Length: 328
Image (cartoon, rainbow, N blue to C red):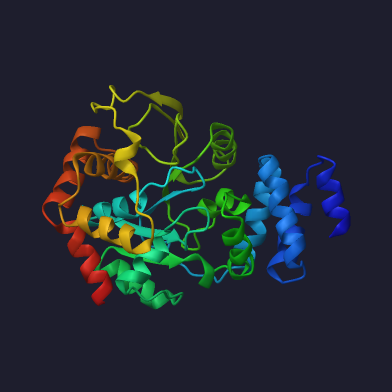
């Protein structure tokens, strides 16, 4: 490990195989806490290369608990986090809106490390019981339309690295890798990325997969469609720029998207929006992300999918999905 760290500190990169072996050793506990912290710092100084990301991901998917949910045409809405914007849990709410519109969602997430409140914090606060049992997750998808995969109970490495990430309190390499590690391997993904260079690396990687995807980056640094600036979007059809005006929306003030100071406040915001009591800005941002996700799933028009998302939220269907999931 000392040789690898010296190699990286000299601004060298790893091959796919070197990256894979490094993370296999990390997942087996063969790398100590200080070495792991040093490793995360290396990749805070630069983005990992495409080869490194592919190698890291291969190791993590090899070492995770295996499940098979491929019978479902499902989507995950997920972001890298680490954008420093302290928004409320936009992508998680969008997932329930999409499920309320009748689609299947396999949501992958964890506790907040670089953010105050991750999706797992909110769901745990609401009483959701994390599971890695395939039969239970299939039952959730069949009966409710959504299941949640809590990263640490699928990926042992997350339990090893979480204390380090939490103590650092800033984005790390695991923000980059997190959206790529859904054990349910959904066929569709809406991935938010916090910087344009990383969005391009994701795009190069996904071009060699069969995934149906949209990689999005708001040009002012959000890892989701924030409507605070124009966005860049990468799909199997190529890259595209969307202006706020082209989406038929008004520009939002970043302050309107702020989350709370702790999990309790963010959970209240989460329930308030799903209950139909969100502000105009809160509603617009969750609806636009849900709309993009629905468009990946059904290829219908943007306008049609916006209305589907709006109906899911305003009719209470999205909140009903949450209630059913918690009561299952």
